[in-house]
Length: 407
Ligand code: ASP
Image 1 (tube, rainbow, N blue to C red):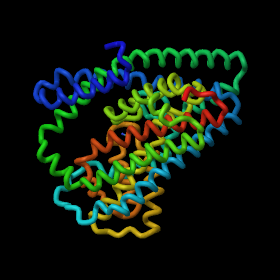
Image 2 (cartoon, rainbow, N blue to C red):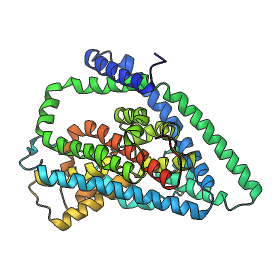
Image 3 (cartoon, rainbow, N blue to C red):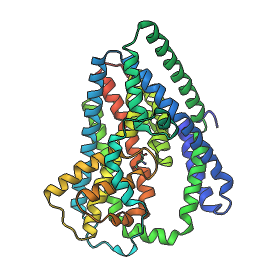
Image 4 (cartoon, rainbow, N blue to C red):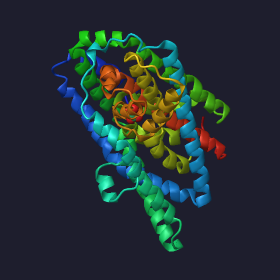
């Protein structure tokens, strides 16, 4: 088993998981603990990994000028690819019109919508933490990233003596965190097996109801999935090829393990340790760039989520028979981008963020209930695209900095 490549092991885990989920419906709890344990281990790694990685990344980037240049490139890549994704979704949802004539009868009640809507403006303000220790204990990624960038930047401003002590300390901590990560990664096949078995068993319970809903929301799902497909297999590879001058297929192969993990966990954050390992070791991007860009990307760069926000909001408008004019569609595009930046890298975060888009154009918030039933499967797919885009960004920026890569 150990000689089989890791991504094949994971695929085997996935298939065995589906099998167990289908046939062990009641005894599946004897397997799902594997998934729980794996997710716990990944979550254990995330906060110290992100903090040490960004601090060491920023100090290694060195001067403020370098940091500014890398920061600008990163933001440019994140915003432009997210916009490409949103426009792809916008085009498809207007073309296919999945919401026209949709049956509103099975709308589900969703709690906590108003709260999510209210808190968005605050989210932006709250990027600046009042108590960093609280940010750490609550895994507030944006706050942790903000503090890490500031902390790393000012390390480069202190006396050389302190500077080298702290740089060594954070570089060493980061090395240890990566070693722990590599150890956890070895268990991915078992973790995936457990997670998939749980999800399949849960869904298999009311198979008939699910099939019915999938049927009715079919065109909506197709719009999202087709958009994700175009973005992942056409737009991003073109950017890799033209801007980065790298081989998209090779990079895709290098990313096999994190991509399958993103698909099963539906969490960019949980996948982050694996993404960092793959982009660095398999694609050959320097630690300087991965340790700065990837933790940031896992939290703010979500192309898949951005596309999905746009398609879902317009689908809901169509279903309620509300026509959105040009200006309103522009508002949808902009708020979809903001919602994707604000969404956390955890399962179903994007679903809640749709309220931001809906309220911006005056659509009923209850519309979220319409798309709830199929969100799990769409979440898996959009998370995979989110992680894929993060990795492409690191490769493109590394190339533009003159790095020699393995892809
Ligand atoms: N689950 C997604 C992620 O972690 C976010 C979302 O719900 O769209 O990237």
